Image 1 (cartoon, rainbow, N blue to C red):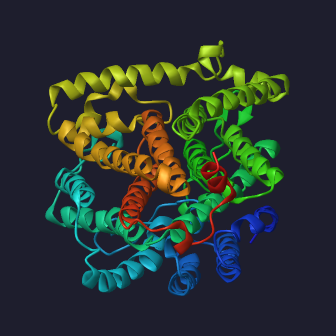
Image 2 (image 1 turned 180 degrees about the horizontal axis):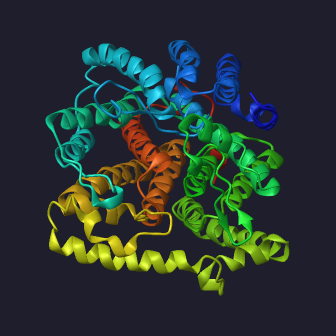
Length: 520
């Protein structure tokens, strides 16, 4: 343990401890103090274990029993999962086995799945079988259909020298197992365990708390030009690429524990969307404003244009489709203009303008050109194999290989259509689009009879729509992938809860925002 690791650990703990302390009064509006303190202590304990552990497996020896215990104690495992989803960076570490390179890779996502999600799914399976909640619906069928496509179609990795790995029955079984661990269990637990409004709000607030910590870390990283988790990732993986500092112009793009600055921006944008609804429970105008500013400063620290646009889209959708949309939209436009004007007059103004091509910015303009070339080449290949895609498409895209030695498919839709065709794309997009339509329909039904529940659905719908927008400019990786299925699960839980026609008083007193809406 070097002094550098200790210094990084102290910085991470201080930032987290201060954030937990400041946000605690808000968090306690959605969870009990016992649950908040347990989750906070687990978060801090895992952070200490991560910085002190020389490798991932020693960290796992500490983390797995702690997570297993916390998952059993927590009345809302989804909230625990969302808080801890990015407690450490998602660093893939292969499970060694005799005869092959690795059984499969482990990271924090899969560690949480084995310790929190799968035990919860087993408990839910026992309790929901009798009640009928385990019955598959069209959302489940779309997800399982997408899983079949992923399992049956083998995509050889993009390896140097155009080496094409061959598929096998063992690989097929491995893909099926990992789809269950990574995707279906996550969707199943989120959609079946959020049985009432309190559970959904607790989950949303836990995710906001996680992103508040990451936003604070991002602001520090941007200000100090220092990625405080990079050394942990490099030490565990042995790959110096994890210590690579990504810049846009002269500015460091913060990434905190998200694994990439673009992913961090997306996560914070979704947290901001959740906060648009949750803030109606906070009576202090200062607290509401401070949390919004924290999320936006974190967004700016990532220097990721796609999430900036996505966050603005989420905000506009939430305002435009809410009650008294026109006055609210006009008020929001005025306030946004004032905030943007203040930012542009500040020292950040020139930096932001420099990375926005439509405002004349020329910094990193090469990434825009690359995306245009990618779109043209992708469409050309998609037309050649429109139904089921071309699993060897990498071999035909050599002209798009970057200086880092990779072909960066920075468009989730193009990536799916390339390798799985329009059949795969329909299943993939259909899952979230159907969830969006179901949530929006329920929102419109409930807006008059239960405006608070309607606003909750509007917040979810805005985040789903924002995700569909932001996936245009990022590969389907890391937090993008996890939140895609989490939002689908939350959509299913919301619609099922709405069909129960539960009165607000059966769950908790209405928020100030809901009472204000009813008085209009």
